[in-house]
Image 1 (cartoon, helix red, strand yellow):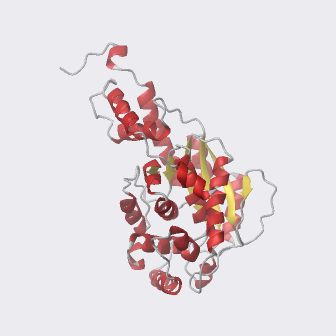
Image 2 (cartoon, rainbow, N blue to C red):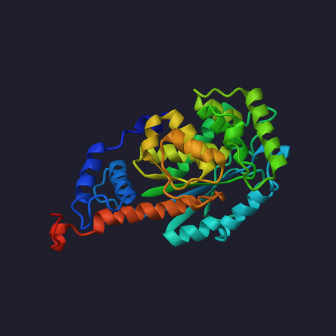
Image 3 (cartoon, helix red, strand yellow):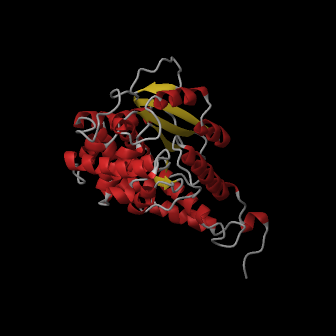
Length: 347
């Protein structure tokens, strides 16, 4: 399945993007006066192949998984918060639920690797559990190579089970900024110290310890930056693999993919490492407080739509980004031209 999806990812249509810009220049405004909103809409046209994109079906995948490295004391919260928050998502009470309702998006919650069996028959939950949390990356590989591939393919599967016009990525997993930092360090060639932040709000001593844990994980596992699946399997997470799968599936199906924060960024590095053309299907919703996120965005060549000091995850930033992208497309498709409105053009 993974190989088939990778083969389907085509370059975006630059010709249609140029056409969209020509239409932008006929709308009742000074040329270029809506700034990045014009560029955003043009990109959606090039991604979708649709001159009049209508982003009705908005879906945010919030993928959950636990991490064995949590036992190293790298997070301010205990592991039981992961399943507790999954139940909160399903009940509609989390930040992502509020913002998704606000922008008219659906939240699809996916159990990629929560450490306990979730006791619910809620139809909103998709069970793609690869394992009961990853292994401790400070002691050995997070998962097998086969499990890493299965995680990516699970993300592809959940995407293809939905009808989607625009997709957002989200995550939930206590301690998941640790494997994300490890992935970012490997894939960008930066030191763990430069890409590791405070996650859920750890103090200085815990941050220093977290960096040492990541350094130990990289030394023990020796992930190969030229092999993204090796990186995912050795220092990643099940939900990170699932998000990489969503990114690849969105790209293959010509759907705009809106990245949330740091964990989504780590997943994007895996996806783009597997197929560089996927990069052109990505929008960065925001720049996270996590110090490594700017390095991720620079590496991917993405300029964030927002900078609101967010660091919650869940897909909250992606929800806001989707709203902006939808607004940009409505400008392109609903705004009058000078000719249709009978407005005089620039002299």
